[in-house]
Image (cartoon, rainbow, N blue to C red; front, side, top):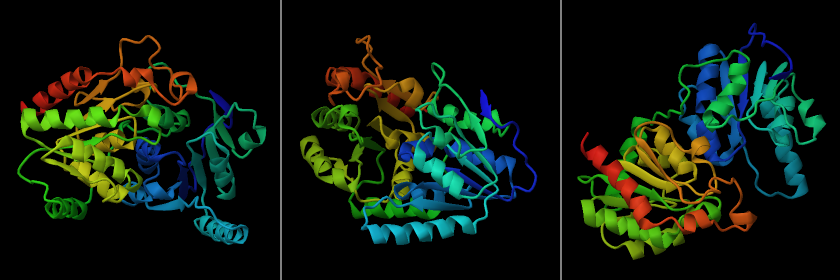
Length: 362
């Protein structure tokens, strides 16, 4: 539903800013929006604003012409003033005609307004911050529908203003040089190149979304014993110690790559894998976007809204509990999730086995 503004004037749009200040997974799910803007404005200079940790993904995106990264590091007050001044001057240098914010927060709204774009599109926010909505010339109030995926939700903001694409699911193309670097990395880490490689990401930004390191280690041992495949653990530098713990519990033919790649190289690693298994985190979205089959292990969040779609993707969640999904931060917001704690090895193994057998059969 349109709340403010009608059609977008397409005349004289030569510079566009798309803002997605969510986590890395949100950025990946916004790739169809980048593609839609490119297809509707093929000659425009298209810049994407993201948090610094996701900037490399945009640099590798063929539909974007550039990236503005938001550095949220803590600074002393005078350093903050200097940074903000430099950032504002960089922003205005692009002379944006159209700006789109894919979130309902305040930071993206301010960034949209400061861009100087004469047309500014955003989601109508209902959180009572009326001043935030005033930053936009065009506002749409879009409720997420039952069963609607978040990639569709983001894209619907553009579709509301007749900015469409036929490609509604995220796609990421990995540069050849990065795939070559993955081969070199595998050789350096003594990861066999003549066996299928399965990537497992046991971690999430939120521990209440994690299945548990002991169960992931048991799953890795089962994959190696059952199929003889190579298994790698992936994660951030901060998760490397926990990944080492899982690797030690998993035994031979398992490797720890946590913290050994940039986010762009992580995407290249997943492109080089036969299957990705992980919880509700950025990894499942990146794997699906590079066309690697996935098994997603979900807890409180809705797999129908967040898990990858398509025949080559499978979902595991606790179907025995009627409260799933609850979208809470653990049971009653306590940070632990019964739905994941009670999800058994057999529950996950049966799905992983179907996926591997399907891949092996071609």
